Structure formats: C-alpha cells, structure tokens
Length: 251
Ligand code: NAD
Image (cartoon, rainbow, N blue to C red; front, side, top):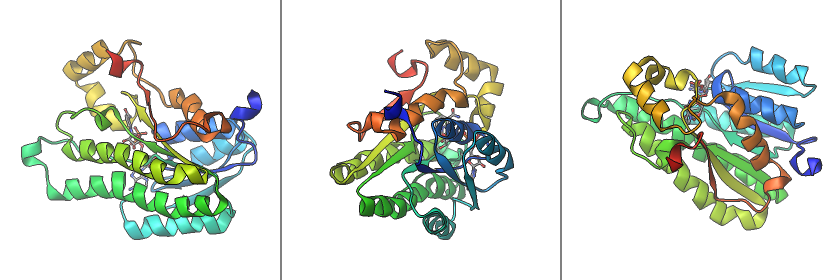
C-alpha cells in the first residue's frame, strides 16, 4: 500500500509556496518523495531549505501570478528546466475584503486574475504537457466559498466557485487521457489569508462554534490530502472537491 501513496521520482509544481498552505503542501509532497518546482512572488528560501533537508530537489521560479505574461513564462520555464511535470498544485491565491457595494474594479480584477485566470493558464500549459505523456495530476485549491457566498468577499467567492467549475470541466475532458483533475477545499485555516477573521473576536467565535473539530486548520492538515490526490492511490478519483474543513460543511 505504501507504494500507492509514494511520489518518489515525481516532480510537482506548486504555486504560492513562500508560506501558508502552499508551503504545507510542498512539505507533504516532498515527504512522500516528490521533487518540487516552486512558483511564488515572495522569498522561497525557507521552503527551499525545508525541501532540501528532506533530501528532495527544489527549483525556484519567481513570478507574479496576477500577471498573465508572468504565469505563461513561469509555466514554460518549469517544463523547460525540469523536463517532466507529474503534478500541478494551483495554490496561489489572494483575498480582498470589502462590502460588495464598495468593492473596487481594481480589487475585482486582481482577485479574478490571480485566483482563476492564472489557474486556467497554468492548467492549460501544464495540462497539455501532461496530455502528451497521458499522465498527470492537477490539484486546484478551492474553498468553503466554492459552495457558499461568504461575507464581504464577492470576488473571492466568484473565483472559488469558478475553481469548482473549472475542476469539473477539465476532469470531464482530460480524465480519459490519464490526467486527473481534482480540488481541495480547505476550511478555515490559520494563515495570513484569515488573519483578519481570527483577529475579529465576533467572527472568530462564530466560525469556531460551527467547526466540529473546534479548531482552525493548519497547513500540515493538507499534507495527507494533497499526497492522496497526487498519488496513484487516487487514480479513480477525478472531478472531486475534497473538503478538508474539520467538518464545517456537515455542521
Ligand atoms: P497566504 O496568504 O498565507 O499565502 C499565499 C501564498 O501565495 C504565499 O506563498 C504568497 O507568497 C503567494 N502569493 C501571493 N501573491 C502572489 C502573487 N501575486 N504571485 C505569486 N504568488 C503569490 O494564503 P493561504 O491561506 O496559504 O492560501 C493559499 C490558498 O488556499 C489560496 O488559494 C487561498 O484562497 C486558499 N484557501 C485558504 C484558506 C484559509 O483558510 N487560509 C481557506 C480556503 C482556501
């Protein structure tokens, strides 16, 4: 059974890996044996050192994922530099909070460019590479707001609903050709993305009261789920959105 979950000899691209959930998933993939191509706008040194300490290779591609030119460049550089990509984790994402009536066009565009358009571009370039080899695993990072409306985050909600649709759409077209496309929907996780919520005593208490496990999630909570979806163990799982939410969706 261990073999089914092994990623030895595989290479994974993960976007947005300087901190938070991206860094957590990189560590899980590296522990399972994968080499890593990291794409991020900020410093990747800590993540690189952690991967190398696990005995895996790390290749850094600095890029701003809110720019379509940068995304295309990074995806092509990844293929050219490592030759074969087995796993793509589209993790990089941002959130902008403001009441819908005041939400700016600028924030709307930035969130959609990064959270949805960049995911389509990465999936398209790396997906075509995987289709040539008739093998690959694409894992998108969705959210509870792929299912719910959220509060004061209209662009984020739209982007994450879009991720759910894109995951199913690509899975329908590519799964028969060896490329599985799934998503992980993290619940409420303790990262920079949720700092504002955790600092607001009212919101924080209301969120915690609905989580059956009675705690915020941590980046390490995604290690097992991402390894499962990246490995042979999940070969018959595709078009699925796996909630890793401490039970939020069922409460
Ligand atoms: P985070 O803010 O802690 O980390 C975001 C990562 O993206 C960082 O490594 C950052 O360097 C990188 N990044 C930011 N802007 C970038 C840019 N322009 N180009 C390239 N990289 C950039 O956020 P997080 O909580 O770790 O979120 C990661 C993903 O998980 C996002 O897609 C987010 O929407 C999703 N998510 C988070 C939660 C949560 O509770 N934290 C819940 C559901 C989904």
